[in-house]
Image (cartoon, rainbow, N blue to C red; front, side, top):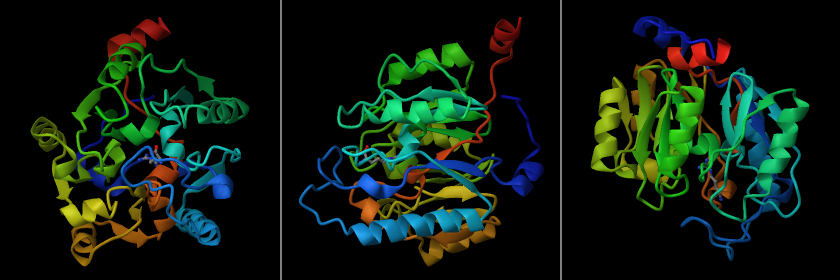
Length: 295
Ligand code: ARG
């Protein structure tokens, strides 16, 4: 909640400034039992041993990269609860629970909320309209880059912005393959991000061109391989797949890809980022709003 406006060179040295602490949910009850996005086929076979191996591999890769992993217990009958990114929005030690647009996922929220209560965090009221957590709201340069139109609704953000004084760049999502913003956008530091142009409308692409000084543009193939769905921790980019081309683009900017195969979770339409919720995000709050709260 303390705004820090870094000089570009400094920002680059520091990397993203968040992603050192995440919340994850073990895949005990993970499965594909319903279809709420175009990637999900309930008839597809999920290999449960492989699921565990992939999840544990992701945990150890994150830990080796210097990220602390906390967990929330899995709940029977909630197969998508592994995708903690959708549980809510973190700012400092406040947690704003999501309002899931899909009834199948709605019961997850109370369990995650209880975990945050246990950790002693402040729980804010959920938005009035559907908003699917950090999966649709990523911190970039002190503000939030949010998606709306597929799962989250644009009106959810007006209330959140008014209540918290957050700076929000809202991008419309129309492609059913990229139904959350974290499938098409991935902040790398305060001026660099991976961007999948086809996930956005012309207006959204324009807004991103204004916002991101040095974008790493993904090819359609990289987008479909969920390359944007990466967890950035320091200068390590933990991603479900990477191409030699993308590896070079990241390397040129001082980032190193660490590929973690999470293909079993891909059957539910998720990658590395979806399986984590960053716990160390601090967003800027508009000065007038801060004054209102403090004074
Ligand atoms: N099956 C889940 C859903 O459709 C996948 C969630 C992916 N999460 C994400 N942050 N993109 O809701």
